[in-house]
Image 1 (tube, rainbow, N blue to C red):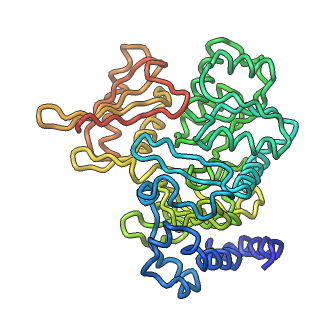
Image 2: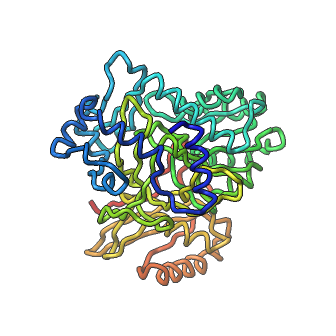
Image 3: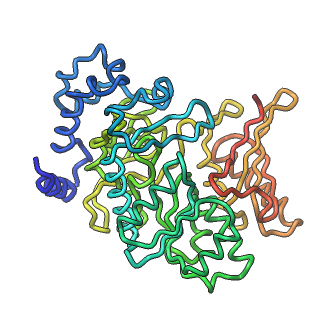
Length: 430
């Protein structure tokens, strides 16, 4: 099947409103990859040693294959996932490794080019053109972020301003002097910059129009605050180190999900407990299979990100399917007094109270034989008005989750800001 006929077929599927199923192009590509994967990759040779891959013929068969996971990739550190000869590897990237052995991902020349193509699509989906000046604050180095943003900008033909993280003084100077029109950042750093811009009163000196934000989940309240303070239109970009990096999907101007590039990747959503593939529209764990990746192909890779496949067409007219904004991670869950909770529930609580700002921090302690959860949140309210707000929030959370928490109001700016990702949950019980 040619790429043009594939595009035509997918367009028809979207018009008919069918669920996002494996199409002919995806199936043919996956079967072709499976036919040689044992020969190319020591990792898959071991993983599939007891599986006859010639018997995988359709989507139903494919869904019987075992999942892969970050723990699998750590076991074959450093380059056990590599599926091409050394001479074809032109670059490596790696996860941070802050929670264990890092995951190293080798890239071929084609992998690097394919990543840039996907990232250029993201910029174009956000209405960014070659006339824009793209201010890039995510980090460079082994991490996939900064260099991905830059490669996409250069392929687009826009001016890339590769700042990297930190040195806020210089960031703001370059934004003003170079008249940056697009800010690329984590939500945490975008907030820090927006607060600093407000503090210095320099917003009218900026030319910012759009923000491309990724790397961490963020709530609607934080999104609206950053957009309002910077005066920009924000777009959520999605990606992970193991799957190219950021740029495998982005929201459009309708802000109703993230369009994903299904000619490069195949997406499933599963029940994280049973592994069952869920129907479109149901929230579960996102699983990704790479279709074209050469250096480190991944088959049924569990991302641990919680989302859903959004059925139907997007008003923007794009033929690319959508997943919902990431609501959390399966490993984000905390258990207090026998109740399971996710960070999104604290953001949902804060969103219900106009006097509470977007920033929060959760402290969990075990004192005198009992668990205590304290929710610190920022507010502009005067001191004498805060006790009632705290009381109202405690009551609301009790009704939402059936657990008693201790809300504590603090001043705007009291909670820590980050140039990368902001930790929000601190479990001091262990």
